[in-house]
Image (cartoon, rainbow, N blue to C red; front, side, top):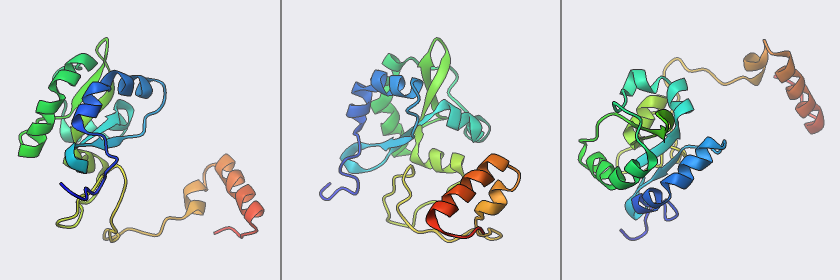
Length: 172
C-alpha cells in the first residue's frame, strides 16, 4: 500500500518479535496503548490490563479463557490479526506471566467499543489510540469545565489556581 496513513506504525511481525519487550515495558509502567498492523494500517491494539479492567472490558467484550504467555502470543499473533481482518477474531486476549494479566490484545473495533468511542468516518483509516478525525459532540454532552471537575478536590483546585496565576488567567 503506497502512502500508508501511519508509516511508523509497528507491523504485526515487529510486535510479535518484541512481545517480551512490550510486556516488560507494560510491567514497568510504560502503559500507553498502541496500535499496530501491516502496511501502516492499524489492525490491532495492545492496551494495559488495568485500562481494560478500569473500562469494564471483560463486561463489554469478554475475554479469552486463559492468560496467554508472551511466547505463545508471539507465535499466534499473525493468526490473530488475520482473524481480525476477516472479522472472526474472538474476545480480547490477555497476556501476562504466572496467570497474571498485564496487557490485552484486541481489534481496533474492540478498543473503540471498550472506550465508548465513535467509529471513524467512512473511508478514514484511523489509529484509535490517537484521535485523527473530528467528531461532533454526542447528544446531551456539555462543555468540559476544569472548575466543575475539580470542585471537590482541594489539591486539584490549588494546582489549577497556581497554573492560572503563572499564566495570568482567571478561573472558570
